[in-house]
Amino acid sequence: MGKVLQDRIDEAAEEVKTTIEALNSGNVDVEDLKIYTTLTKPPEEYGSTAPHVEAVKKAEKRGDSIEAETTVDYVITRGGKSISDKAELTKYAENYDAEYYIENQVIPVALRVLKVFGYTKDELKGKGRQSGLGQF
Image (cartoon, helix red, strand yellow):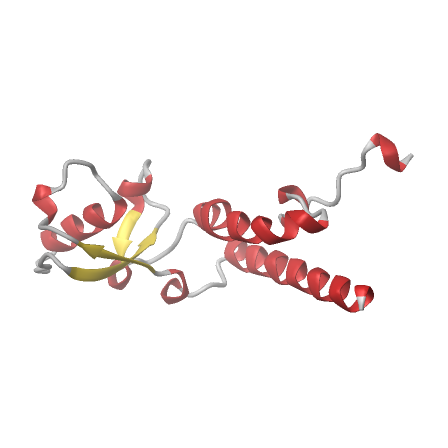
């Protein structure tokens, strides 16, 4: 039973590594990277510049009309400095910021489970297992 469980954990870790490789190589469709958020009020009423608000404001400059209580989907792209600057509604996203998705979406979720089994962020990113003094 332990071997079967360990094999499944190793498969899960390999799936994470494969996902990271696909993101890094640009082989993921932006449609698969959508982040959904509901616009709870008109964009001009937001005090902060949240990514979804900035994406909506950009879309409105392009002629879109998006009302409060609308669920929008957006992607974090490579253009811009802040996450909010990089946000584009999915229909306008021509690329994506692989590092954002790896560091903020894939790794945190995967590590919640896999760190219990000894996996590290570096290992999931394909940098190999760290050797500690106890292994010598």
